[in-house]
Structure formats: structure tokens, C-alpha cells
Amino acid sequence: MAGELDHLLETLKRGSAAERSEAAQRLAGLGPEAQPAAVPLVEACGTEDESLREWVTAALEELGPPPEAAVPRLAQLLADENLDTAYWAATLLGRLEEQAAPAVPQLAQALGEHHELAVRERAAWALGKIGSAAAAARHPLEAAAGGSERRLATLAGRALTQLDG
Image 1 (cartoon, rainbow, N blue to C red):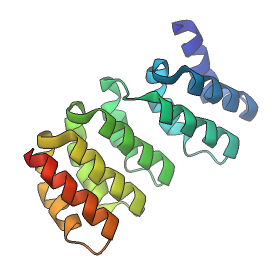
Image 2 (tube, rainbow, N blue to C red; image 1 turned 30 degrees about the horizontal axis):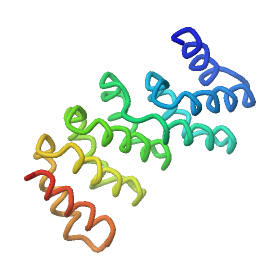
Image 3 (cartoon, one colour; image 1 turned 90 degrees about the vertical axis):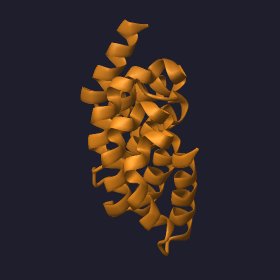
């Protein structure tokens, strides 16, 4: 399995458009066994190739939580200009729950500053999943909870409850 996964990762990074889509499709079929591919899959979200983007999304939906070692790179990807890349970085960090605590500063920054509302919402959700270990994000969450974006305010309010829970 490790050899196959390594081959799929290499193809995802360096193959032709058709090969990359096929690799992402095969990774989607692996489900949680594709966890080592978490970061390359998130990085591939920014592609303009619609077929690849759809298979990458399918793989990420089936992935479950990524390896804890992915936290630093996922935290960096939160600042990506691409909506899908930043959104999935926040999603995978949230799936790690308290193990993603080292990414709290970057999640708080995404919550307050990312240009895409969906990323700000996902950052609020992820901070809530991290729970009390995200206490340093209390002020950005309070600001979002009092803001005019209704869904973001709701998610930030829930996250604040989870900080205390």
C-alpha cells in the first residue's frame, strides 16, 4: 500500500492533467488510507483543471483527519488566496480537533482577515472543534460573533461555547 500511495502522490504532483485526475480519483477510493496525501491534496485544490479539482475534493471528503505532522503546512495554506485551498486547510485542521492547537494563531488570522467569507466561516468552525486549546482566539471569535455576517456570527458563537466546554 505504501508503494502505491507514494506513486499516486508523485503522479498527483507531477503527472499530466489526465494522470493527476486519475491519481486523485484513486486516492478518493482509498478513503482514510489516503491520509498521508492530505497536504498534496489540499495543495491541488487550487488547480484550474475542473476534473482534478472534483476528484481532489472527493478524496478530501473521504479522508478523515490528516496526520498531525500536516498541521504546520495546513496552517500555512490557510493564507492561500484560493478559496478551495484555504477552505480545505481549515477543514482538515478542524478534523484534528485539539491536535491542531499549534495552528490557532493562523486560524484566528484567517477568521479575521481572509477575503473569502467561506474560509472565515470554516476557520470559526475549526476553532470550535479545537475547543479550549483555542482560547487564544477568543477575541477574534467574539468580534466575529458580533459581526453582521449571520452564519459567521453563529459559527463564532458556537466556537466560543466550545472554548468554555
